Image 1 (cartoon, rainbow, N blue to C red):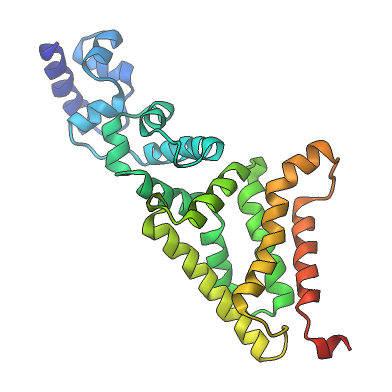
Image 2 (image 1 turned 60 degrees about the horizontal axis):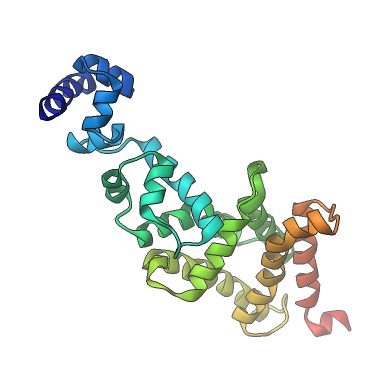
Length: 258
């Protein structure tokens, strides 16, 4: 076994030095061993790369995040097994922990990769000069596209995201909490400015923000049930736009409605 392992390592170094991304079959053939012998020496291709101290390929990170999205969406972060995640992503434990040292780092990456925090931050950075009647419906649509865009429902992650961040557990990671605070802070500052200028009703900005996002999140979480059991037919983007417009009417200053 030791001789086979050393032969695979030696030939793999030469093969990888030529560039490209050789498969297990190609690595085994270069070493003159069967695939079964390869897997007896190394549990996976990533395990071989770990032994060679080669950084994981970019696609490996995406594969892990895709697998984590499914597992966290189905069972939540606290129930996530890093061993199961490694198996689902078809990577070694060493590769997994090299890229994500623990659940905190993994969850932070999931937040930035799949949640609406980064897309909403981008909208705020590029369009914050627009009035509430334009910007707020666009934010609602951005949130919807994040969880239902590309024909894929990520509502399971939405439930996990809401629970994990609101629980303030250690596994949510400081980075994820910082991202939440950043988005909330920029939106609250935006609303305060328009309240001061008389475009929006005066109220605590955080409460105004909760009254905006609350119905949208509730719609997103319950939408699959409403479609399946209550025959909901309204387009998703149209639905959250209507909710945003209802919020805008409720936030109209009293003197403007009298």
